[in-house]
Amino acid sequence: MNGYNRLAPFYDRLATVFVGKQLQQAQLALLPYLQQKRKLLILGGGTGWILSHIFKINPTLEIDYVDSAAQMIARARQRAGLLPVESKSTRSRFIRTVAFQFKIK
Image 1 (tube, one colour):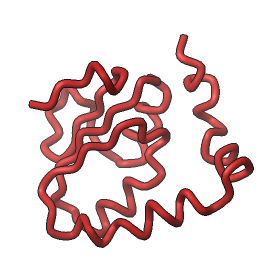
Image 2 (image 1 turned 45 degrees about the vertical axis):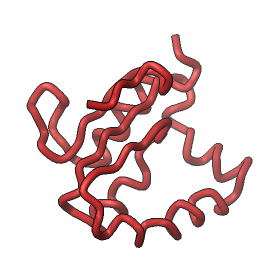
Image 3 (image 1 turned 45 degrees about the horizontal axis):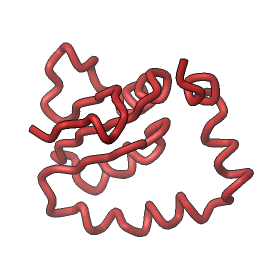
């Protein structure tokens, strides 16, 4: 079992305790670069806390969201308010795999 599955419920709080707000602030600072983009690849995105911010900046962005932990994918999918992968969401795909095995299509 992937260790991040056990951490998923508290991952964001733990990250804030250990890293502070700097990581989130750095990620938010880069959002304006996504305004005119069509596609985005997120590797190891964790719980998906940033997805709502991304969709505010660019609601038509197509995202491939890759994480190795099923619970992280589940939280990210829930946060994005998207249908499961099998229902053919047109905006995003949530893929559970390790990054080095992911194949771009």
